Amino acid sequence: ADKRTASQMKKNAYSAAGSNNFADRRWKMSAFDILSMKPTRKWPDLSRAKATWVVLKNILFSKRVKDLLWNRFNLTRKPVYRDFRVQSDFSGYSIGVHPDSPKKILTMMFYVPLDANNVYNFGTCLHTPAQYKARDVKHNGKAVCLKKFMFASNSGYSFVVNKRSYHSVDTVTKSSGVRQTILVNWYDQMLASSKPYNKVKYR
Image (cartoon, rainbow, N blue to C red; front, side, top):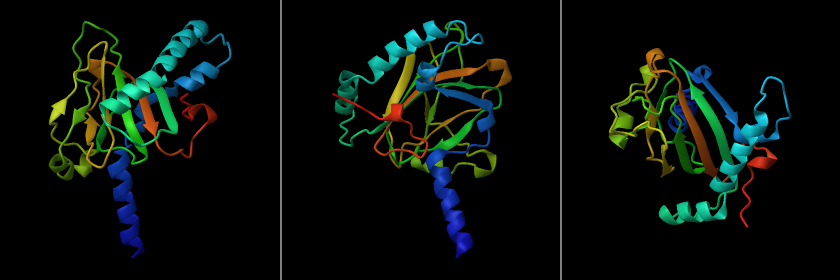
């Protein structure tokens, strides 16, 4: 019974978060942490970076944007926690098919290609339930991609998270460079890693 329970827990954890086999090949940092940083010689342009992130934060977490998104997707769940970070995925990184945590209401990602004129194969893949069931769990949960977002400058996507919001990221190859993104999430529950600045406050 204990083995079956452990196996089921592992399966549920995988289905929610995807495979983390290559987590060491993703660099990520909370934008809120950047905003709380003190001047340092290692980052001489920190003040300029902060100014940019302040503008972006004020826009993304404004009541106007929240209302537009909630109306667009007909959402009723109340957000209490937010996640706002910059990510860089290096050669070898990939994440298998998964629907995301049930605590998450809405996810949004912006693509930030290193070269706006280049064509990348970094876009997020969307999958059907059948493709999810047929995923190759022995090879990082890979599956046939139903639709892939174009990884282009000034572009991104957003979708409601549920049990069927299956998506994945193909392997980042050395020849294609670094996959840079900005990720924004809204949750209806606080997470274990929650910090005061992650709390949602809409007036």
